[in-house]
Length: 66
Image (cartoon, rainbow, N blue to C red):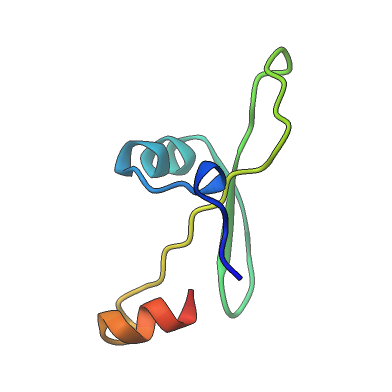
């Protein structure tokens, strides 16, 4: 089951914004970055973007991990 299109972060500019303003949580397997939203913005859903390191393997292996 995948994430619906409006909830995905796909653009490089969106990822860069999250990395620049990040608060992160990390464990042995992954890092979660969050972008703080201004309080006046009504966010009715979360957006998610997945990035898998090239250390994992080739492209088809990284897609499988996602």
